[in-house]
Length: 192
Image 1: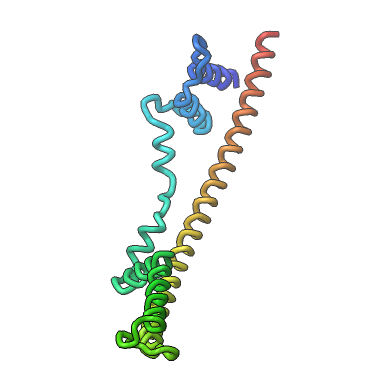
Image 2: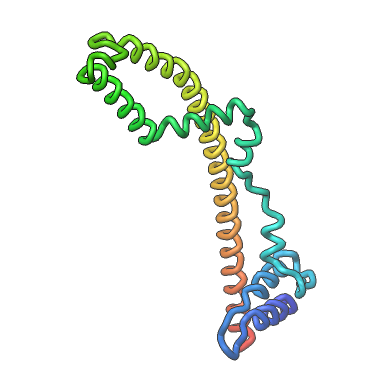
């Protein structure tokens, strides 16, 4: 037990640079791992932080996963959905409609090509645009919904990993607190 306290004190002395009261966090992490591993020789040359990051599970990129699963037709549908769902597209349709209806209502009678009030050609073209765009927009929205589901699942996995890491850190902090309390009591016993 006294050897353990002596090793802990050596480790903590090495961790704390007493001259400038700065903490060398790499040594702190190495010593903590050393204490956790049953006092095996600390890895002085190793990099604890990089080793820990390398041990973590890879986080998936939801955008790459989603794009890798798409066909060309699905990419076209998503691109069309992105373009049609803009204010610019709305303004184009609005201006085209206003010009068409205005020209065929108040324009020179000889140059009107879609007579008022029926606007048959305008209705036909508008319906054709709707017939072709609506299924593509719905497909694009479904694909965007799948993408959102992948992102949500990825966020959930990241949250689980973060919670697991926070629990581990809390446990380690509790263990360090207990070790420091033991060291305090041993130092008090030695000083008596």
